Length: 307
Length: 316
Image (cartoon, rainbow over all chains, first blue to last red):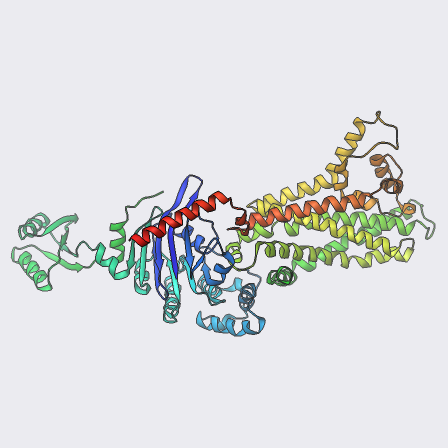
């Protein structure tokens, strides 16, 4: 569905996107992850035909983005990270305006608009002015706008940014529905655990370069350096550490009476470790195993480069 | 052609503009100002005992005063409606959403312009009852009023295009508004001052009647307007301005020249409109349908890159 090949975008001397290469298969949901200024928005804007790349190419459904921007615009539904709405229009008029912009015949528009408003749960606000909607509702309306011409690819740039937790959940639910409908979506976000729940594939970008890309499981496996156990003690942290190291495990004191122990054994081995500490009169107040999550992987694979 | 004119932008602009409370307010203020000027002029003339009843010059004089003030109003109103249409979309953060639709940059610019000009046309049409007063006194032909209205439209189109160009080139609406008004001021006053200055510099070189006027004066819509006034009804101050500029007496200037000042004005304005519209379209086109102008060399380099990539894929 989407192939990006050596895409580079420069603003003067500043390189926002540097030789980016990745692909998104049809029907998949690709999470585009990266710190602020990593080049996510520039990449998505190039794909939405809003920016011209300095070099490199990208194809959507076989069409090159810079050669046929008119065709690409019919294939893509784009939702920017920051967007405005025409406050002086009503909700249905707003969608009708964009539907007409995509040259959808007037006879079909009414049904399409009704269906989309049902999908984003705004049917009850159909006749309301757009400026009376909450931010979350406006975000959902913008999502409906992206779908008005039934695009083959949805490009969503931080669709949940600035939303309260409830509105975030609502957006996530809509994305799940779109996933069930078989839509191909590329979505950027900072909220990694949300992406891990809905994405099939993921790409982590830093300083304009793709650090890692693949299915979510592949990335989790490739980047896992081991699970860990966090142990809190009331006192004797040093003694606990020497006991742990004596049993052949790696551990460090990470805080006031808090130890982090690298551990990849079974639950029985965990139980034995805890029993060993207690038998040696270490006052353990907490003993918790933690698996690697997407945030940890993100922290590991990125270097925290700030540009 | 239909894809450029009957376009959702036009209907949206009409809907938004006419829905707002500002719209009837602007129309009321506009007509109120015109009516006030008409009444004030007639009252001053009556007060100075210039008229005893309805003299033959009353109609043409009121007509001239009305048309001049209407032209100034059109010049004043047009930038307000056009100097924020593109950067206003940027400030509202709706520009990206608009440009990622299949609407072409040409369609966006033309329809934004048409929507603004249509509103100004509505103001001009709404002012027709004021011109009815002129008919009450008589002395002006309908064809003369039609000519004046065409000058209004050309002026609105020119200043509208200048406004829309400024709105595309400047990021902030306030800046584009100020620059647009500055350019309108240069068209209306600057051209007059430059012409008078140049005429003054060469006053001794040629005898009156053989002096030519600088082309810049034809940018001025007032000159185009003055050149079509009925000779018998021109108030003293208007004929004096024309005489100052052309060193001839009023309408004689238009008669002697092969092309009348209003025709010069239309030609120059037409060129300006076309150049600025093309420039605006290029400015707002994000990836450029104008990328076809991309150099052959760049395209060849791209092809070489592509063939390298294909080779890598095959060998891989």
